[in-house]
Amino acid sequence: ACVVWRTPTGVRRADPVAGLLVADNGARSDDGKACGERACRLAELAQQQPAEFTWLRRCMTATYLASLNAQAMCFEPSTRRCELAIGGALRPASRQRWTAIDLAPLFTGGAPLPVLAQDLGRPEPLAHYTGEP
Image 1 (cartoon, rainbow, N blue to C red):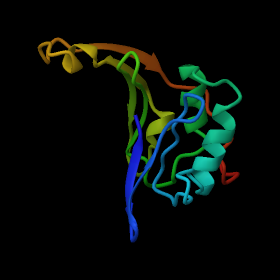
Image 2 (image 1 turned 90 degrees about the horizontal axis):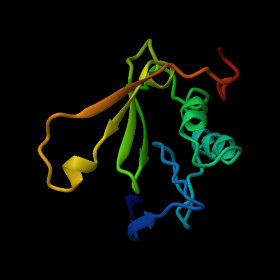
Image 3 (image 1 turned 120 degrees about the vertical axis):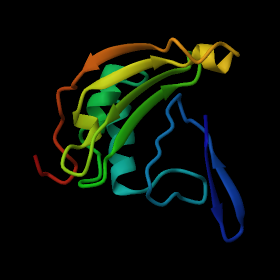
């Protein structure tokens, strides 16, 4: 997994650091580090329990963009497992029910159905980075 973006000087790429790749719609530094307020908070929280998906889902409850969190996702490339939550303007995705989807069959030429999905419930929210509930 990586994040790729275009700058006036060309295409840039950021790779995971210590197994974590944080992405949001904020700016990135010249070396590719996400430097937006939300991305920095997410990276800070995620380092407390790296590679622990339950914790990462909780971290995302603290960093969503108010009125603009239609989907939230954690993806583990090695297993091709995607954890996804869907929301809307008044219902932030990261605070809704999450579903884990095994995408491995799709990446290895398997049939698209049946999709193996698991309901993960709602995460216990952390304090939002803005200080709002």
